[in-house]
Image (cartoon, rainbow, N blue to C red; front, side):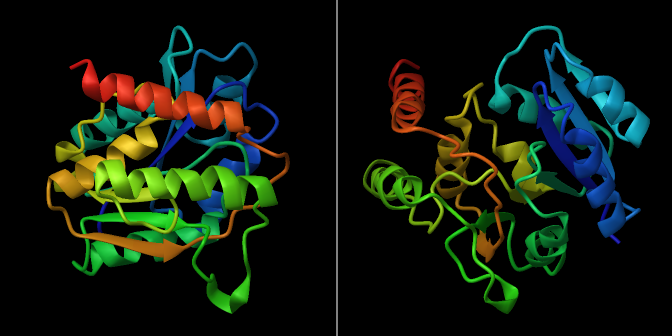
Length: 227
């Protein structure tokens, strides 16, 4: 069986981190869980360690992209064959992880993106707020296609998995939320075999507002054109 590392970036997620780790552990006791505490001021790190995860710490809040990079680099050095990115807020389902990593272990893909827009098994769909689904994510999908050459159904997914070889090539530089677009762009640029699989996301709050979406675009294009 491939050595699978689940990387969980976390910033002040003490309310959800324990249940997230328990759900992942229930899905498989073989997976290695790494929580990257991104400068939290609450008990996130303590609770993650108590729940059984390896905890890496940023002294200051650097952003989700930076936390994922720290965790991914650790996983590669620790011998990971598959690296999975998974959120700490309880919106993702650990039950989806086997389907996300299956194309990698079968040799059918090098990068797999979970999509809220594909039909999940049993017909269950993510409860994406209307404005987010049709305006913010619709615009993001169009921008990804025009400017990045990326044609994926979900333009900003945080649930993804890589083979070890792909993880090494996906050397993203965006520290904050624009890392999602950059990872997709790098997958295309490096001619990696990409697959999408359906996942279910449960929203407990609205999530990213329009101004936040604009900020992501600003971060990404400034990062691309100022290098």
